Amino acid sequence: FVVAGVFCVVYFKWLISEPSVADYSGAGFCGVSSSNLSAINSALAGLASTATDTSTELQSVVNAYNSVLAATNGGTAPTLTELQTLGITGLTGSGSTASVALLDTVIASLTSADVDTVAEIQALANAASAVVAAASGGAAITLAQLQTLGIDAAHADISAVQTALAATADDGTGVDTLTELQLLVSTCVSNAAAAITTITNYNGTTNAPSVA
Image (cartoon, rainbow, N blue to C red; front, side, top):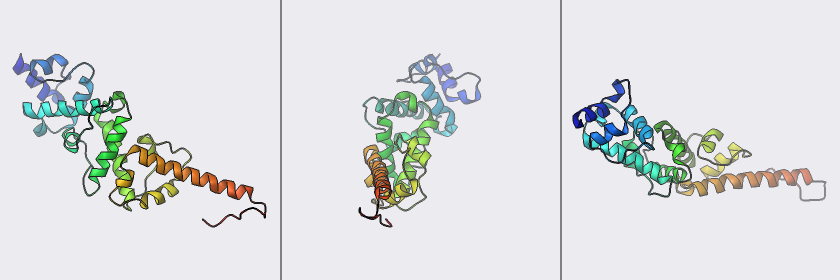
């Protein structure tokens, strides 16, 4: 039964049915239950066979996904190594530390249902990396990327947000938490609202609006 279970887990991407909790248990893997089975299978399905062809590698995948899920419930944040074990890409380069830090605070703000597929985690990683890249003068952030991270940016001028991001530390440490990023965006919104008030209230005697 153990041998059959190992075969099913390792080679399930070529099989019709996905491994069950019983398959993992029978093969000797710990930490798989009905609540995380689908998430773990989503990771396994996306990984190269060479990354999952030993029991140690497979258990590492299970452990890594459990770290992500636990982080949504106050657990320790997943490490870069654990994220990469799940097949998450793009968290490289000089801004990787800040990107992972931002991603971890985002994951901590979510529920397990928000990160129960690798695709969902990858979308969050892409958005976090985009924020850090924008801080160092890279490609402009998009409204969709901010909203993916859970940022309230409905009334934000994205060009103003980009300017504010570019004014933070190039290594991303100024926006490597969800709180810092939301404050930056909210400040941009507040500044824009104040400017509009100044313009609309100007009657020739009040403070005249400036170019800024």
